[in-house]
View 1 (cartoon, rainbow, N blue to C red):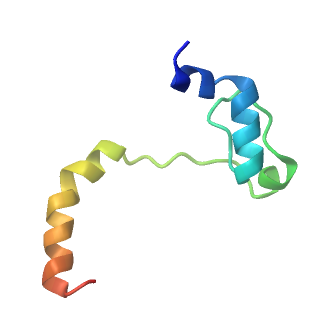
View 2 (cartoon, rainbow, N blue to C red; view 1 turned 90 degrees about the horizontal axis):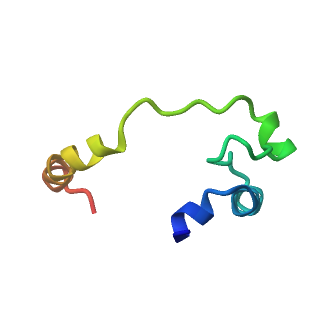
Length: 68
């Protein structure tokens, strides 16, 4: 088993999600009660691949705006 495969299994997901107060990536892992009070998790519909596509344009825009 590779590291990422292991990290997605129930025990590590439970440890990480609880320690970081996050929703677990593994749907079989129970959500911490405090996190569950925040409401149902809603996945962002934007693909993270899009972030990479627009990164160069975003940097140019920040440079023009003088963002530091």
